[in-house]
Length: 493
Image (cartoon, rainbow, N blue to C red; front, side):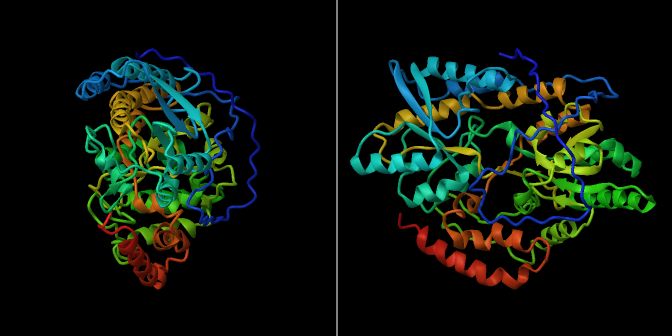
């Protein structure tokens, strides 16, 4: 179960265009309805070698596989006598990969076989674009015909599927417990309004490579008199705050006064949603939602002022680059920036980086707060078509897939990157910790469909990121959104 293959990473050539030190601000208002990353944009540092100055310490998991099997075996006993179970999804890359080249894909394949044997079923995945899934679900419901057993829908399309009345209320399903630890509790809150919960996520749907993190240039920070061990100590003690990150950035900016030309903070793939990440990592919710509750926007402009101050400091820093069109990952890899805020899949781009680097969670607002990583809107969550005639079958298989994934697949992801990617043992501890921080928000699930919600939450924060004038627009936008939520998500349903 724990055998690993070392993947040969093909690093294609890239050309660094460093035209200025100026900040480019991106305020995309689509709610990530299009892909926010180009995973093929891999920098080439083939002339460099991955080096580390310290011996590796093997990552010790906590018996995750045994625990996953305990959760799987605690589910209701069922024998479906070889029935075929269909999962329709825009991508099988994580739920049912086409190959087993990587450690994670191998474990996903084996997980599916375990579930098949446990329930005596055959799992079949089919690929359809999300919009096609929506149309097919609508047509099947209208004609009262079968479509699929389980859908995997992008987070940002939850509101669209809900508006078309295509999703089964998961709280009506027998033998189904949304509060099991192998489901992310915030993911069910994210999709809940009134008496309905429309979708849920777990380790079987959220790929570990899609978490966001802070990559730090350890050599450059040491030049600026910030030792990496001290920064790791801050992170270990939940003392890694946005103020500390900005203090480090200020010190790097000071190096430029002596004739150097370094960047402070860069972000490429999640650039358009950086304000969302900082807002959530700082401990705030755009929308308060849960079962048997009318969702409401409850954050206060005055309470999130520290977030807005952080955003203004970053977006008005002439030595920062927040732009999805600029090769910020390549700039970081070449040693020219102190921090890169990006997705974990960028680690593979940095395997042969010319500079030593470390990994950190997104900072907190106040020391002692828990780390939180807002999951990308493009990640997939599980939903069941409204007219499914055997919802128990769908629910138990859904539970089995997530129970049988719990913990150990992420542990193997850490082990693989320890051996093949990471530069120091501190990063190993941080990677494991980052994967425990998955966070979700109602606004990101429904805002793409319901503009009033978006206009009062992530769009508003993005709009005010550089200008730091949230108070000017806050009241009108929030009042309008809460009025909409009280009407459209009330408890009559």
